Amino acid sequence: VQPNNYSTFYDDQRQNWSIMFESEKAAVDFSKQVCIAKCNSSPALDSVLCQDLLLGEGQGVEGGDSLEVSYTGWLFQNNGLGQVFDSNVNKDKLLRLKLGSGKVIKGWEEGMLGMKKGGRRFLIIPPAWAYGAQGVAGRVPPDSTLVFEVEVRRVKLAKECSGSDGLSVSSRDSPAPSPVPSSDGFSSD
Image 1 (tube, one colour):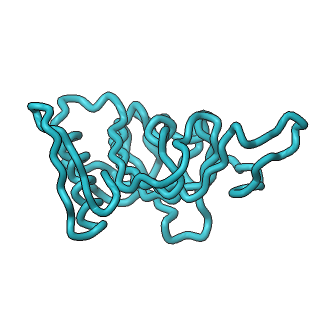
Image 2 (cartoon, rainbow, N blue to C red; image 1 turned 180 degrees about the horizontal axis):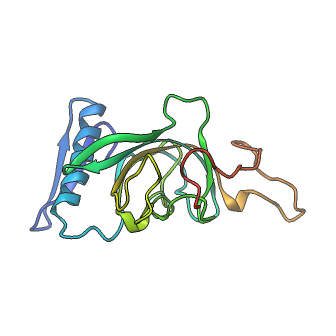
């Protein structure tokens, strides 16, 4: 994914190609379909597939950074997007999480690394990196592959959190501590 509705890729001979799309939506939809095709063509999905939809700006996030995100989660059914099982897109509250704290599924911990503020990413997460054989009662069947579109709205970098005097150096984005998400289906229990 590149700015101004461009995408670039390499073919089997390592030749570089660029495609310009007529709109941001067309570029985003194409990128999602590429990720879905990658999933459908792999014999066994054993890691998280990530596809950037929008790159965002600033520094990429890493473990220890606090984020506020909006997301939609689908079940992966019939080789594509199935029903939505969770979303906070039309809600007032963003999901707050600290990467690496183990409070969200492992697939999110891995799949969101390197994202930037304003960035959107498409994640396809195998059961072992999501809810596994347990699933989530009434929402996620056992052994489900999940698909998420996540957008990072706010970032608080871990290394900005305290100066040498222990006082907060940067509270530009979210001065309040991140609560443990509980009722939204992403808690680790």
